[in-house]
Every structure is written in C-alpha cells, then in structure tokens.
Length: 111
Image (cartoon, rainbow, N blue to C red):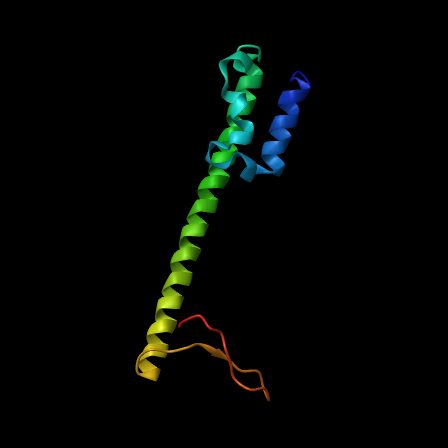
C-alpha cells in the first residue's frame, strides 16, 4: 500500500478495524463515493477501496444473518415462555421476581 495516499491507507485501515462504521452506506463515509474524490484517485487506490468495501459488505452480511437468527430465537423463546406462563396461570399474569428468602416483587411489565 506504499503507493497509496495517506487518506486511502487510513480509510482502508478503518474499514478493517471498524467495519460497522461502513454498514448500510453510512453517512459518515458517503463522501468517498463522490465523483470529485474518485477522479483524483489512481486505479490501484480505487481497486483497493473497492476490495476493502467488499470485505465490509461480507462482514455486514454475516452480522445481519446472525442478528436475524438471534432475533428469531429470542422472539421464539419469549413466545414460548409467555404461552407457558399463561397456560400455567390460567390467563392474565404479572411476572414476578423472587430472590431466595426475599418477598415476591412484581416486575410491573403487564398492567
């Protein structure tokens, strides 16, 4: 990367260390796509930025897959839990916390 400008090197390093800053075409870095900046970069610099962005998109894809799976898992567990509580209690419930030796304390989630 020694032939690259300092800005290009810094940007690529930032993509590697903080890829989430570039997820969803983040506004913070949108300027790198402006024509006036692209016209001053060499083809090698443009290619390096393009490859770094591809790596970011792969990380973003992986992140979105994991987030979706986790969200579905948590929603499924909550639905299963709520169904179990309603079935066991015969209907409307107020979740409660009880520490060993302490009085029952309502969470106040349902009113």
